[in-house]
Length: 133
Image 1 (cartoon, rainbow, N blue to C red):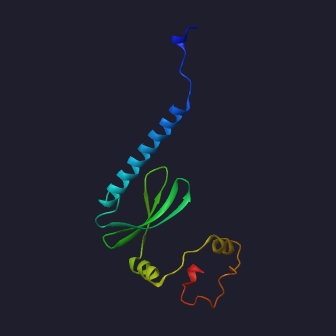
Image 2: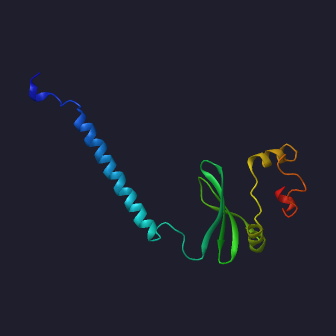
Image 3: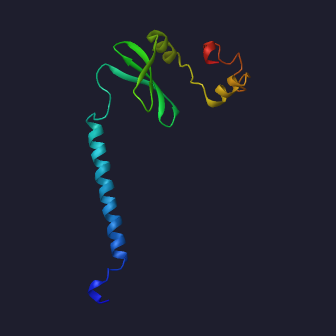
């Protein structure tokens, strides 16, 4: 084979140029995201607000959504979204204001096994509703 038909070797200069190009692209993407985030792109607007999200599986979640003073539990998965229930907006606001702690994995596991969680004695949190114990 003649010298004109060979491919150029992979030298350090081409590797360095590739990394420099990748760095510039990442820097431009970061700057664009910061600029757009400052202008409110991608943020909720209007009367609809996502109050909470609970992932169930990698592609399935439930959301608590507030719209026009009403709260809904919405299921999202592979298919279309579905309204699962309408929630009491005043009770939800009262729970948020009272600082009801979310249940952790240990609490849910203890409840499933029929035991009380060690970190949550009955006298420790008297203002926590019974459904969250």
